[in-house]
Image 1 (tube, rainbow, N blue to C red):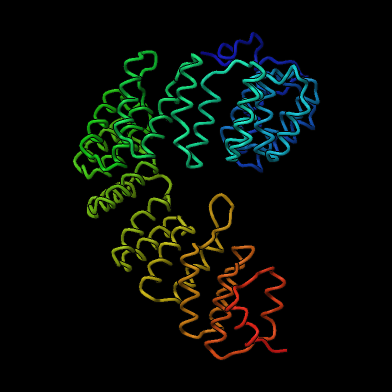
Image 2 (cartoon, rainbow, N blue to C red):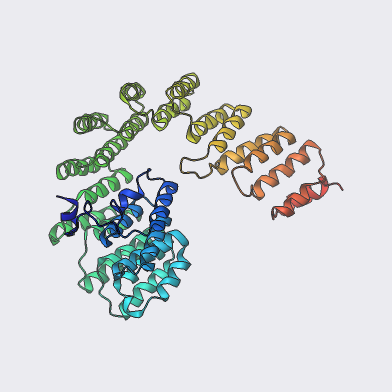
Amino acid sequence: MSLMQRYGRCKSVVKRSKKYLDEALYLKLFKDGGSQLNVRQQLNHFIKSGKRVYKWEVGDTLKKLRQRKLYQPALKLSETMAKRNMIKTVSDQAIHIDLIAKAKGIVAAENYFVNLPESAKNHLCYGALLNCYCKELMTDKAEGVVEKMKDLGLPLSSMPYNSLMTLYTKVGQPEKIPSMIQEMKASNIMLDSYTYNVWMRALAAVNDISGVERVIDEMKRDGRVIGDWTTYSNLASIYVDAGLFEKAEGALKELEKRNAYKNLSAYQFVITLYGRINKIYEVYRVWRSLRLAFPKTANISYLNMIQVLVNLKDLPGAEKCFREWESTCNTYDIRVANALIEAYAKLDMLEKAEELKERARRRGAKPNAKTWEIFLDCHLRKGDFKLAVDCLTEAISIGRGNGEKWVPSSETIGIMMRHYEQEKDVDGAEEFIEILKKSVDSVGAEVFESLIRTYATAGKTSSSLQRRLKMENVNVNEDTQKLLEAISVE
């Protein structure tokens, strides 16, 4: 099907007039890649050009930007089209509310909604605002939106109920969900596949496995909703979590019959669950099927398989799988190497872990923060704090792949500070805190309390600690405050 047929347009992108952009908008924006910077630069070029585009292009481009979580450029495009008098439908308004919430925050989305004309505030816009509240876990406001929709007599489908029930699941209130199901039934609102899934999860959260099975039976009796991939994968994972391995295997077999592995994630999901119920033969069987279905097997599939084999304590199998990947991969993915490096580190096979890290480096895959975190944990277990600090420093300097800072766990920080406290090593503690400040905005009260105790046990005084605590707005407990006063000098 051609592009124009798909969008129901009679105009051709290829034969546009000169006043239009010379290529489809989404192709223009992603010309230099899909990074935030590249897309924003191309969007600025488009805006400055003053060229026109078809409305369907804007809608399709916004969809692609949202899928890639490029909310800032998506919002700017939406705002630009509004300034150019491109008429927004109520569906467009709902999408705009979602973009504002994700790009500017919930308050900005609320203000935009309030300023909409009353005629535009239909069930789609209220639904968009509801989803924003649910995403931010704002239970009272979410419930208020649903009540408002009822008061206004707006048509209610399963969607607002599904959103609210998902929120209850996230905030640990699954007990509220059965009553919502009853309300839907009383209002003749059809339960869809998502409704049944969230209902099953709610019952599983309170360990009502027989209730989960009753939901499946009810869905089958109803007949209007056919159990899909999500339904049976949901059921299988519920059985696995409950330790009902025999029932889990049955659900997985049913899942395999109902879904002929239409996508890669389906294979990986089944492999993972067979691994969790210790069915290593089934793991290898599904892996062979995956390899046949996807001869150019993705790095992520190898990563998943290696992790499953490691968890099953099949290290030789994991090594064989890794060698197969290593001999065929186009891109040497450090994440795949990390899976085996972590397995070696946990088994105290540090020499093998180091050798693999260096081999990955030679193949062009630099260690990432996760690599250094693996070695950090290993050195902490062995009590080698100097090497542990070196690894922590490397992880902080690299940061995460998405541009965010890498922050050591509170447990790691606690172990390090207790070590310096026990060793009466004031200089080591101070150096560690300076490294930590490159990762966190404030090291917190617990770190300073440990530092103060370190000064006290080492018999050292400080002329700056009290001032530092005031500058960082840190309040320590009463006992530590007394120690601080004892070690402080003018």
